[in-house]
Image (cartoon, rainbow, N blue to C red; front, side, top):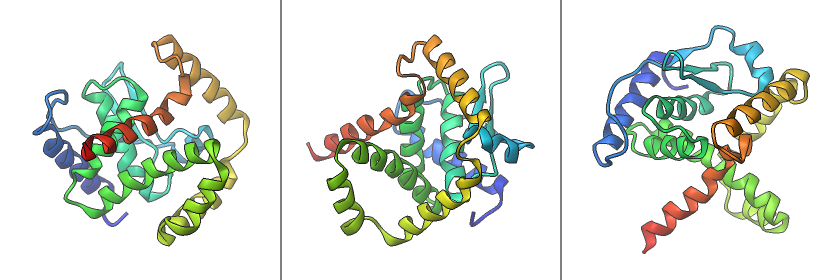
Length: 200
């Protein structure tokens, strides 16, 4: 990251303040997302952050590549501000990041949502996905994603991820999110709707 963790948390709080001033569904308050001490072993679970509703804390896996951290902070801090559903927390995180004065925070929001869009496009139409990647995808972001994939090779397939995913999926479904862990990816629908609303 271009700054230390504490400074990034301040930048995300500032972005929340900016975003909250224009909407009526986000509370404006300052919070301190906590870096997880055991982030490296937690990476095997494929969890980049977790909100503890018992304590109200946003906890961040700081072992993930830097460009993931600001978006994850904004996502978990969205939960602190009453956004419960995962796709909505992703969307608010995206919009909060876009409202930042800091280009790296904006980059984090855009690149994270773009990865969800890319995954959805790949599942829907592999040929269109290839054309998009070849002609419209920024080369810098392609390099970032390649580095991310190499980083994640060590953590990709393991028992911890399988167990954690099953538990998280069941928990989300028990909380009324029928899509379970797939609900994170529903941010694509919200993003498309958001951009369509800007053109009308």
